[in-house]
Image (tube, rainbow, N blue to C red; front, side, top):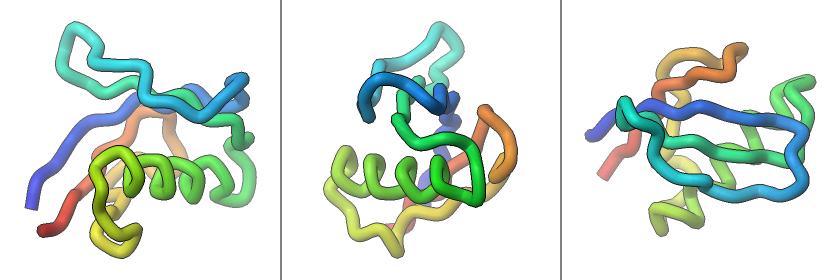
Length: 75
């Protein structure tokens, strides 16, 4: 299992992985608003496609209500 740090920018023009920030955090833009878990759902879907893993192998370990999140990827 690996952990990655994510910085989410909700309400963006499109869903995309922007790239790595200087500290190694992965910056991600999402069109979904941070309301009722919509941005988290969109994040899981985007990461599943990006890492080519099923959605049930990706979990928000920390920061569910924050722009800065820690994601756990299961094997």
